[in-house]
Image (cartoon, rainbow, N blue to C red; front, side, top):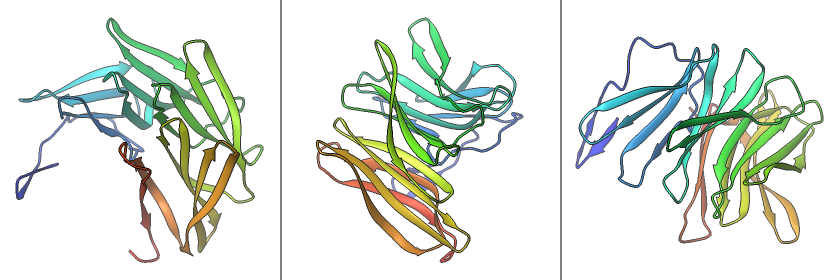
Length: 232
């Protein structure tokens, strides 16, 4: 769905495909202003609008892949996708190269699937923030030209509901939610030169579902949107 002047225009992007667990962070816009969407479940699909029609390709044809897909463009207009591989209990990363897609698994220690979010910093390094329920911690995984590295961003004592990652320059900003039934807090976890810091964003009740987050590249402002089921 796209807003054109004062009205909304609806298109069927693709049909007759198996889709499940579509992420609120599954769409991005390229340098030409055209939308791209990543989704799936039995395969990872990438659909994009080329100015006249929608096109669809299979990025990863492995079974039970493509759930919770997130998509982001870097400053060179290169496309990156993070998604789940349910069959192999893995978080996978795909990047669009001139000759096709390059796919690998994020080297997460736990075998169980985890909640995650993906973004790129100002140097176009890809990063994943991943929930580690075995150790009650959130870890930031970086992919650079020399390989993967990771660090613990924070710990918690409640169940994580959702998580989303953005960057202000090279500084990661993570919005996440967690708590017990009827009392879920939304928090900001951010890194500065002095280390990791935490701030409460919302402690009003049962919110923090389906988080979407972005940072204005021309300012220091980070915006987050999420579902609050207490208030509809």
